[in-house]
Image (cartoon, rainbow, N blue to C red):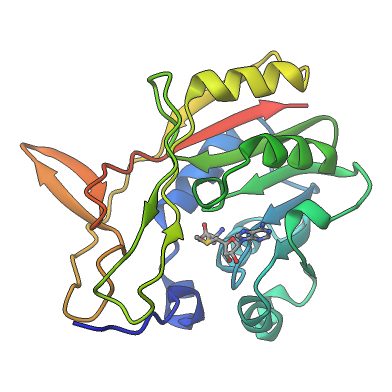
Length: 235
Ligand SMILES: C[S@@+](CC[C@H](N)C(=O)[O-])C[C@H]1O[C@@H](n2cnc3c(N)ncnc32)[C@H](O)[C@@H]1O
């Protein structure tokens, strides 16, 4: 059962099939702002697959991508569609840039950090006044924050990992208030695609979709329901 983790972000075939979450993110943004001639920063951009998708639809924006992982950025930098993108290889916490962006986007990061306070304030610092910030996560309707530590015996590295954290909307409302943000909203991010369980080839903490009655849920081997939402707010 010992499967080595090969990160999905090292697989370039993914660029051909943009994720539903990417489409959902753009649909939410589109309702708030005209997505043309804007300065956009993507935190946790990985191999640049969201930027690749966004540039195909909106080529006239200035784009910047930040990621802590050198190997992912190496792939992004080799992509011809992304040759105008400025990439920064840093932990977002250590990125110091002017508040010059119109939009800051952060997908797939909030559930793997323990300090969402820092993420909100840092993203806010990247955008100018009235700039938009959009973050996805497993935001809890109940007033409970959950930090998940798991050990996946189905993969080679059997060490404790922290991921799939759920922050409550209650906590986020407090953080936003502290940052003087009054107007914000949460939006569901439903998946149209079905993600198969691939336990023969993938570690069991990789996500899949499943039907409960006629409702599609996203889950994984941690036995959690992973209900993704977007939080959007204006600085
Ligand atoms: C789950 S992936 C999501 C990638 C992409 N945004 C998406 O939605 O498909 C999370 C990415 O965030 C990066 N990341 C995690 N923590 C980070 C941090 N503190 N600073 C910068 N990048 C980070 C990881 O290296 C990884 O590429």
